[in-house]
Image (cartoon, rainbow, N blue to C red; front, side, top):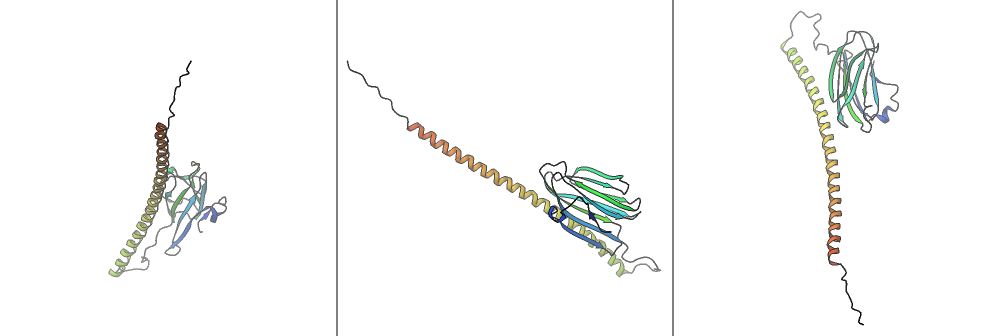
Length: 222
């Protein structure tokens, strides 16, 4: 069953400036969902996933932009039992094995923020990758070519993970740089205005030194 958002998240396309990448890896044996979405201030966004008992799952998330780059995260099983709960985390990863069949829910909350929206990325993997060459009905060991294919396959998976993390770090660094650039620009404008006001004030002050009116006294003859 594909990942779905909460019913309260009306206007998914409007509120979530998200690009959604659903990556079915190696057929139906493993499902992975990578989503980047905007979480407004005082908002909460939940996602649901149907998981079979005994399935190993991994939830990984990271705040890319916004405020102090932190968010609340909560994961519940079908009975409402909290499996994972963290407050104001910048990034984290949690692995668990489903204890029963049902719909699992995980939520990201920005309710503690009053005016800063966040951009959140998460990767939710359900199941594990099957072996590249199944061992059923095999009476011989892997050939040299098959072993090389397995090594290349594992290396490519590592490359994909590194590329994802580097893209996230690049996006976060760009956000910080743009925020710093904006602050420097505003500070420079403020300094220019202050300098202009001080210069005008000094001109008027110096002008007042040379424009004092001379007072004259006259005698009144008797």
